[in-house]
Structures are given as C-alpha cells and as structure tokens.
Length: 125
Image (tube, rainbow, N blue to C red):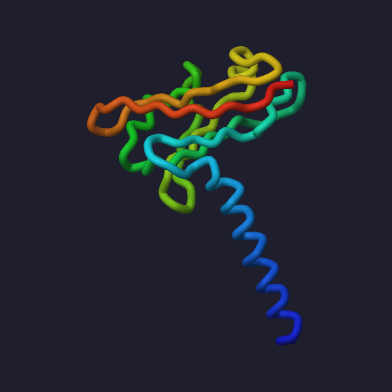
C-alpha cells in the first residue's frame, strides 16, 4: 500500500501546483489583477457563467458595487485564499463582447469608498 500511496501523493501535489500556477500567472503584480474564465467565450455555446478571480480580499470590497464592463455580478464569494470571486450571467456578457477578442474590466468600490478596476482580455468566438 505504501508503494502506491507515495506516487499518488506526488501526482496530486504536482497537479495542484500546476493548477495554482495556471491561475496565478494572471494574478501576479501590483494593483488589481483579474482572471476571466472561460478564456474563450463562445457566443452561441452553452456557458453556465462567467467567473472572475481577483487578488482583492473579499472583506475589503463592497460586493454590491461589483460590475464587469457594466454588467452587475450575479454572485460574489471568497476563494480558498479569501479573495473576491464574482460570477456573471453569460447572456449579459454575450451582449457586450464580439469576436475576435474582448477586454473586460471589473470595477467596484472598496469598503472605504475607493474605486478599483482591473482588466483581462479573452478570446471571443
């Protein structure tokens, strides 16, 4: 049993590190950083939601002010790091994007009233 447990543990750790790296390359640096998912928005395809991950602490944000290029968030919550994650209705996003690319900007207010903004560019098909 020990012989299979160690390789399995190594694989799980490697997969976790790769997943963290895939997200973190969008969330490094100074200022507000965002990562929009899906990376490719298909206008006529099924998409349950558009998700935006940020480097902002959820408890520092006025959640009622969160918008993505003018579209209000349908829900907000914290990720495992305590950072803001916002979800948006795909139909509303489809109305504001066009092929081949779209730059989406997340805006809102911090709890002290300070405005923030962060942008990400995605492919649109």
